[in-house]
Amino acid sequence: MDAFYAAVEQRDRPELRGKPVIVGSPPTQRGVVAAASYEARRFGVRSAMPSATAGRLCPAGVFVRPRMTCYQEESRQIMAILAQTGAVIEPMSIDEAYLDVTDVVAARRAACPAAAVNSTGPDDNLPGASALAVALALAREFKARIRHERRLTATVGIGPNKLLAKIASDFRKPDGLTLIPGRDKVQFLRTLPVRSLYGVGKVTEQTLGQAGITTVGDLQSYTGDLRALVGSFGPKLKQYAFGEDDRPLELGDEIKSISSEETFLHDTEDRKVLKQSLREQAADIAAKLKRKRLGAHTVQVKVRYGDFTTLTRQLSVEEPIDDAGDVYRLGCFLLRRDKLVTRPLRLIGLGVSGLTEAVNRQLVLF
Image 1 (cartoon, rainbow, N blue to C red):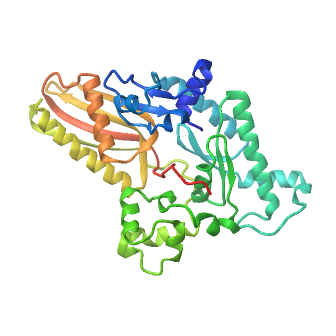
Image 2: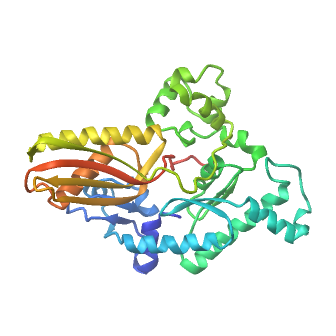
Image 3: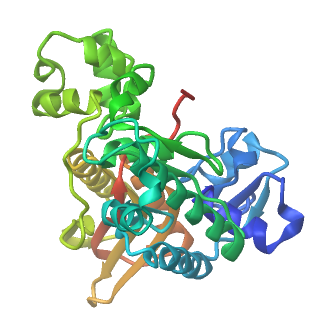
């Protein structure tokens, strides 16, 4: 979905259409940005950013309080539209999903043999170019139904595997549709930055850049052993550079959350002690996220007092985060917002959920 939270607000409040909408706390209060419309993103506003910073970057921004229940219900309605086709669905977050449409395409082709006309040859696991035409028609149906029934826009990417479909979905946003045929995948990827590949975060990007590898084409042409640069990820990264990906859809056993907590020897409300604990927990969580190549949409803080009363508070943002600084800052914000450190704590903890692939969305146009 395109700028999902903000798009829902602009749909429900017509006076906000075309304006830089920032979903989150107002800049005059301690708060963070949950989502931003494309108009606001042009000013550099992003999820998890302090609201005060967003206000400075975008003085004309219209701040709107999040309505998570509304966004969740909207997501349910959209997922129902997708499910009606019979596609196999792996929801990735509140606003994104993978669909395996192989069987749907095959059934439609069987029901309409004329679709096989003008076939131009095989394409990976698809029987011919006509199958791509059926997949494109199906994607246009998704987009049209979402626009008509939900009055929102979606961007769809089509490819022979998860890697390419994901990359395609980040092109021509908003309201885009991009197809990467298997036969064109190597050339298509060449000009993209290495950050566009699944599993390449800031650190890996910097490491590759120091070796003179800045584009996927550089990776394709690299003759050295990538393991010397990125460890055991090297062989898989090389496969991704050529558009190869054998990951199946995950339909039930995927990791749901990551957390870390500390029980103190003596109850404490010392801010330095608590902050240091949160920093260490955030670093631990971020390291696990990066190892698993995941990002989190929701951050949760947990506190337990001397009488064993336990409280949790959480906050969701639209764009996934995997940076220790973001996790730490959101945890601190939740503690301040809900005044959780009013007496000594026996335990403090951080957690993240709403996990999805940590793939950079800011891609250059092909």
